[in-house]
Image (cartoon, rainbow, N blue to C red; front, side):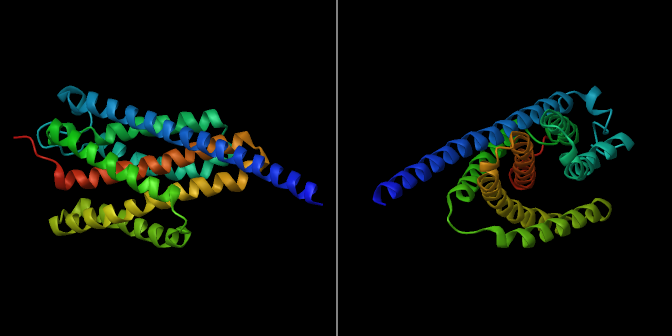
Length: 247
């Protein structure tokens, strides 16, 4: 009996070690995909934002007011997220990965204007602050023993309200509302960063023993997309406070 329990404990330990190793590889894939997406977004935004000719395709280089195409690329990422969520079950891993990179490139087009509006130094400083904050929040979500799932519904409801308020403020252009959106947005996406990281971890553990490589691959892409959006939004809200306008 003792020998059986010893063998059983050894098998359980081996299985746990395999899951831990797989989880680390899964999280590395998530962060790797996210990093490539961030680099693609930054590259596209910089290339377009530092060229008046290219920026002029989407916005007036002087006033930065968007034209019809500018409005299209502004709302395209939001529409692509909804489309991706609805279609991911029918996509292959490679197709999901390609969609994510296409999304990152379109996001770069929508953010290109910041290189015309803010100094390069302030953009770099804000990116550094965002990276430190994001890493801390994601690490907390990964390591905490506290169940964050209860915050999910609250954060999603807050996100929906934030999107509605942001769309309204496009037309009313209220500085007070913009400030409130930035503060509340920072809090929401900070919470979502920790929540999404924990959810990626728990989803992997729940499905690890099924051995569905295709599902795990697409799960990594979806996780990368969620963390990517959290990072971008934290960066953009912080930029409203830390960014220095070009003279």
